[in-house]
Image (cartoon, rainbow, N blue to C red; front, side, top):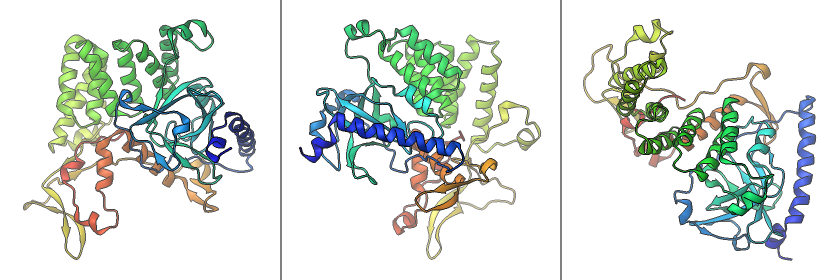
Length: 427
């Protein structure tokens, strides 16, 4: 049997996976007893997702996978055939959609927070879940030398419906009605299990793509996950169906504010306020959008910002850049200079951090790094994780990250426009 087919043998892979599950549970018991400390981190790989629509991707089966190759323009489909486990990535086996004797290892990074409990992993990807992976990268895994698919951007994982209406009718254990799925999503949302809520609402949308309430719920859950663009997209689709849907108006405005689109936010909130004039939430959000728009023009009121902390409408700061530019200074490197004469006291810039990470006082902020054999400040890992996550869901932030000086001559000379840093609020 060839190496490739050996790697696709479902029974052999299941045996290997069961051993991993047992080993992981033993490690978790040791960690709980204080014998060793484990800290999962998010992948540092390029999180860029496939940009092609799902329907334009060519389906391929497992036999067609080529090692060390990203299958551009293709997708694979299959069924989760094991209990998923989580270390640095969520690890599972995906059974081939055509030949149920074959399966492939899959490692999905960045799908859930590093501290997500295993119960949440199992709830999101139970055995029997049908998935598709866009433009799969089939590679040899570092460490054990086995092969499998690596997914860095969870947007490349597509949750599929049951195979047919008949399967929905006959398989009562796996099938759920629209109302049952929506109720489960609402329950997950109320318990702050936003990733599970998103997956359930997506299943609702597959059944009823024109349901405005589902689109509104998806916008709400993406806001909670700080995925501003996705929230804006779902809210706007809902408004195309029902232009006066108050929650979609509100969610659209909320997402627009986080993207620095204050005029759009004010427009939607003004309409929402005329439809629901007694809503204090909408009124407060409208005042916040108006204040942020003033700030984005350099009009900051220190009295409001620092002396009136109880006013939620002025508790945020918009980014602002005055007469500045980034330029290459010969012999000195890249620098920021003024573009005209300025007086003392002139406001030059206000910039929110892209991400903030704190040291956990409970364990003095240190973690054991098995790669180096040393203890490192955990906030460094958390900061990288947060930067990767915020860049994944906001292309403006990704541009800002890539615009920073990376130590090369090319980066030194390719100076970004200062306006690039104007349109991002903190999460």
